[in-house]
Image (cartoon, rainbow, N blue to C red; front, side, top):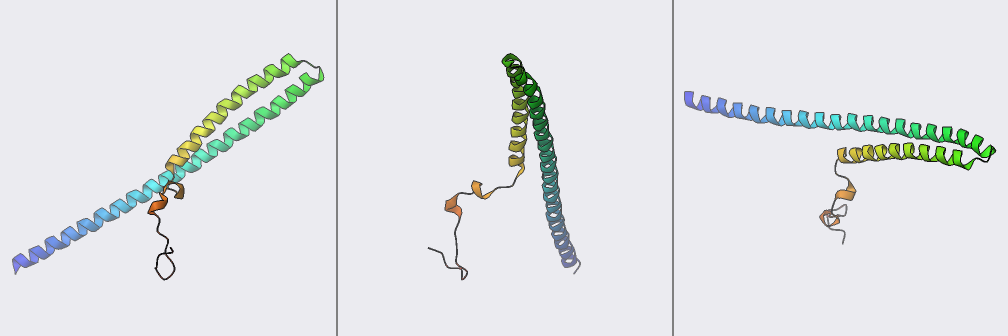
Length: 129
């Protein structure tokens, strides 16, 4: 009887270990998902700040160009435009990189699924074709 008890205890130990491993995996997955969500929100906030910077640059350009247009000095307003454009282009490039990082953090989307893998069924479980 002692041997059946130890087998039972060993079996229970292995079940506990399996359950603990599965639980740890679920917690790890949940932590990873939360980490991705936090990173995504941080990236979105950074994007919003850069978009506001772009808006501010364009507003400043408008004021500067207005004064140059008033005096009909095309060299001044074109140089101001080019300077602002280079800053805006740099910010747009940074925004694009952040958007790409957000896309990489997202789980698989419907666009990533091969249509051949999708099987549509009616409510009764029969194929729709």
